[in-house]
Image 1: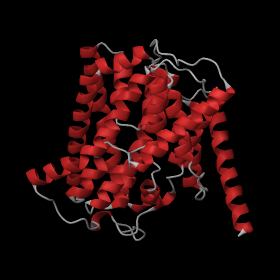
Image 2 (image 1 turned 90 degrees about the vertical axis):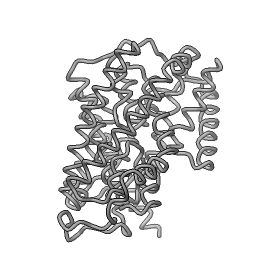
Image 3 (image 1 turned 120 degrees about the horizontal axis):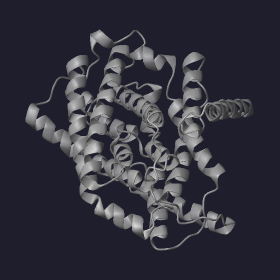
Length: 382
């Protein structure tokens, strides 16, 4: 038992070392969002080139806790009023994401011959863990659903920051954290109350509890004019590293060998998502007066943590981007089951959720034996 524990610890330390090396290289090369992008790429490439690295326990939960708390410090009374002013556009973004997911599902089913149920939950623009859970409930292939979301999240997390940096985008939004100074006691109190918020949402079975719980608690405290402490830069950077590790450890050679045709179509649809979301974001900016880059980032079909980190570092209205993504995420989880039932009633249930002969390799697993990606998603890794 002790030997196994020592091996596990050594594996975790190796993973952390590779991630930090990736961050260092990204800093030297001036890669966008280096503390997130560097570890993500380093871990993903190491996994795919060599062997499965040891996952860092609760990496994504801890990373989201840190980032959610850091983002909550932006929600001053003025920011809250701005978010309320943008409520119609946040609602419009939710509707857009539902429609976009439906279009993606039709395309995925058309070009892969997956069942309608699997295609629907694979292309819905929600978190991997929440969509995988819904997919299992309705009898879809959990492994395919989790794989699609993992690939989409990685593509968006890499393409969007690089695209913004290449375009020379760097905002000047007047949003700054309310707390400017670090206070050790206030920091400990902040950790305690945000952790309590995550635990409450966990008991309520809410989505993304370690991001949304600390975010809501810190935002409420900040909006009330209470400033407990700032978060030191090394702490925020460590949150980015942990989220990058959590996403990178999903990828291995087996991931892409399992269903290459299916994943190729998912990648193509993700590019379509990005193009349509950019057009929609530009329209929102034109009609609402938002910075175009901020609006595009707010409507991009990515994860809360990844998009919020990008917004924060590029000064693109981090609280606005956070509000758009967190509300979209929570609302979609609540309505996706009803949306699926309506869609099934309208167009009929399309086929059984069985593996397709055209896209199943000898090592492919069935829905009853999900891949490591599916298992990590079901545990709440995203």
